[in-house]
Every structure is written in C-alpha cells, then in structure tokens.
Length: 406
Image 1 (cartoon, one colour):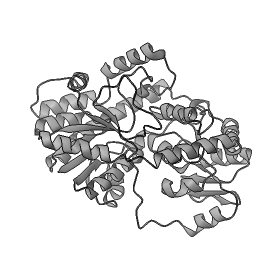
Image 2: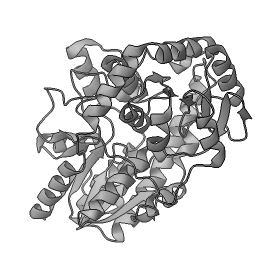
Image 3: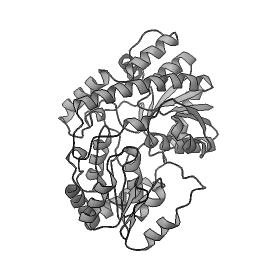
Image 4: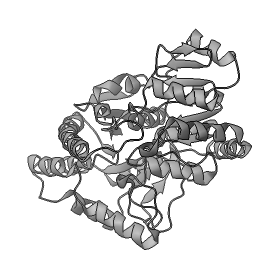
C-alpha cells in the first residue's frame, strides 16, 4: 500500500511523521511525505520519499519580542501570509497525490487533502498531533489558550471555531473546483466526516492526554509517533566536553520560532544560576553556556537538568520522554494546551506565557524546576509510562482497515 503523508508545517510537524513513516515502511508500507523542501533531508534520511510542498512554513512562525503582544497589523499580515502559504500547500498536495497514493494521512492543517483523496477515489485518514475536535474537555486549541470555559462553553466555542473561517477554506474550495468536485465548504466536509465517523488518529500519548469521554468512536489516541535519529549523526566534541565538564545543564530552545535572542537567554541563565545549552545560538561559548544547532532531542534531553521550550507538541513529547522537568513558555495555537498538560501532570512549574515573559520570570521558573524534586519524580513516572506505549500499531491497523474498504 502506498501511503502519502501530507504535512504542511514546520519541522516539529514533519519529524513525528517521518518517524512514523520509517516504522510503517518496516511494516511493509511504501511511504512518501509531502512537506516543504527544507525538510527533505529529514524525510529521506529515514528512507521515506520526499514530495515537495512549495513555500516555507517556518518563515511564518516568528512571534513578537518576549513580553510583547502581536499587534493587529501583525496578526492581519500573518493571516494573509498563512492563506497564501496554504494555497501553495494545497496545489502541492494535488501534485504529490497524482504521483501515486493508495491512502492519504492528512495533518490538522491540510483539510484539502481530503478533497484530493475524494477526487482520486482513495481513502484519507486524519493524522493529528493535537486535539482539534470540539469537546467539553478543553477550549479550542486554535485560539491559543488553555483557559477552560467550562464543559458547555468549551464545546460551544469549539463548535463555533470549527464552523468559522480558516486560512485553508479558500484553498479547499479552489481545489474542489479545479478537480471537478461538487461545491462543498471545508466546514461542511468536516461535519460530514463526523457524521460518517471517519477516522482521525492522534499521535500523542493517552498518558499525557486521554481521549475525552465525548469524543466519537472514530477518534483514536494512538501514542506518540517518535522521530527517528539519523544513524549517521554524531555529537560534536565541543558538546560532549561541555556536558562532561560540570553538573547537568538546562536546555533552552524554541524550535522553528525565533522567540528569544541570545542576550535574553544569557541574561536568564545568569539570573537562574545554571549551566545551559542554548539551541539556535551557535557560536556562543563560556564556562556555563554552549550554543548549539540541531541536536536530536532524544539524545540530548535525558542529559539535562530541565528543558525550557515553547511547549510545541513534539518538543513537549521529547521532554516528557526524557523524564526531566519542563519549563513551558507557550506562544500560540496548541502550545498553551500542552503547557497546561505538563503542569497538570506535575512534570513542571506553571507556564510562563510568552506575552508576559521577562528574564526574571523565566529564571524563577527555571530555579523552581531544577530545585523541586517532585517535578523530576513526576517526569520520570510519565517517561516510564510512555516507554510502554506503541503509537505505530493503531496506525497500521487503520491503514489495513482502509485497504479492505478500497
């Protein structure tokens, strides 16, 4: 069976799918991943085929300065650029699918993949890294808040957001027209998929967030889809020497977003009184600090005293898997949701919202994370539970079910 994964996102969206793709290939599937060109090495390194989606999602995720709110002008520009990017991604999805696919796995920002699958007469399955189904258990993650409105309010607002306008609506409508499909809105298509109980697989752990009781049966929490480490990767001598030359440092990194400049991070670690590894700050060296580029989290995080990050889905998973405390600095979309889950699990202190971020607040949270034994103990408990889960098996089962219906 030829599986096409459609992943129009940042590295944090692509890496789990590449890891899943590698394991699906070991199970006998032929896997191609549609993603931006920047992620091609990540995909081909694990033996999957890369099919290019035009554009670069990473260029759209840079927030305002720490402690600042994005202006209305910034938000309008972001939504315009995001809509333009989704147009490119939708066109790229058509081209990727036309190169051959028997089933499509579509992430949460690729609803046009369902339209493409409909035109080709093949099944499409949701493959999400965050919960977006309206539910009484949480507010809609698209709003970038973890503040609950109560069961009724959460479900109502989630339903309103799901039915409202989104950056991929126009691309979905255009794709349907260009492929000769009947006119149907993206929201209408989603309602039909709910009514017919179409499957959506969620690549996160039931230990971290179990399926809510009001989810329909087609929504499955599979367990995490762990990224693969390039077998050719080796840590630098400089990094190995730094790790060996003192107590475990903390990690500070914010993925694809340029959320903090080097001076902000340096001031923070001076105030916290810790050693630190700073991702995205290559060239910085000192007795207590080392700047690094890309280093596999599964190798680095277990050697840290704590990890400080934006609480993106993949980085959150890596921190919990490593069994070390987390300090969350959520910025937008699903990050406040995952930050709240970390705190609820007892694996870290209260989040430091990016719009309220200062070096003093972050340093205080780092001190709490590294000096409170209960956080480390809870993190180790979560890590032990994650080690027993297999996120690939439910995906294999869903693909076989789809194959029987073909």
